[in-house]
Image 1: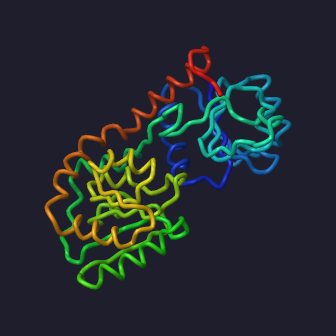
Image 2: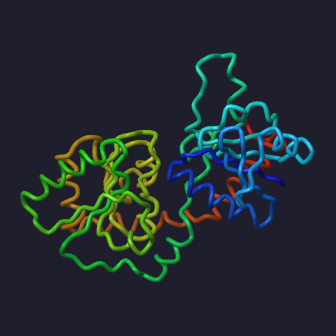
Image 3: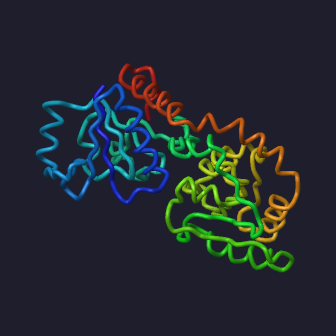
Length: 293
């Protein structure tokens, strides 16, 4: 199978890791070419730039079986006439005569084509060494993405409330994706965003490493935390409830059952699980055994 990956920047953290994992999985047994869309040009991984017209001619002479878009598909995507897949974040056109812009299938951990979320192998490698050994105090809380919706507001309000009765908590809001070692240094991982479409909370990585997880309740977080069996869910925007839950998560024994439940989930985040699901979807689209949009 020949797969063309098209990256249209800027990518979310979720789509960026998915692209890396997908390439590593597929490259073992398929031909995978990765291109980055740059206006009306495409660049390959060796920084060779081709005008769109030249790239299209290559696709006509040696067509890919599947084109996988990471990030919103560019304006010329519909003209390829090749079976394509894209993230569920793909903006659906409101005008009916623009339906042709939609890809063959939309991928999501929650949608019709449920391609599971995966965590990169380096996080599993660290988890297997038992590296999560931080000994408080201070208790370290971690969150990713100060630009994400409600993250800074909720973290500031919650920490102010928490500080009224605990002076041994430190809360870091990271502007970069933490390394496995860095993530393992936190006692709890917090995802305070209230956005339904935001998949960038790094909750799956935190579960794999062994952190206690506290997150605002939305569809993806409810799935990741097995409806609060593997972590703590709080109502979106409720700093008072988040304060209470963080205190429970850090200072009470009720985290034990959730940690045990989380241990049962992490194998589902292994890269090969996503790889098998994605390959099955590709083959189903090629052979007409998978429902299309």
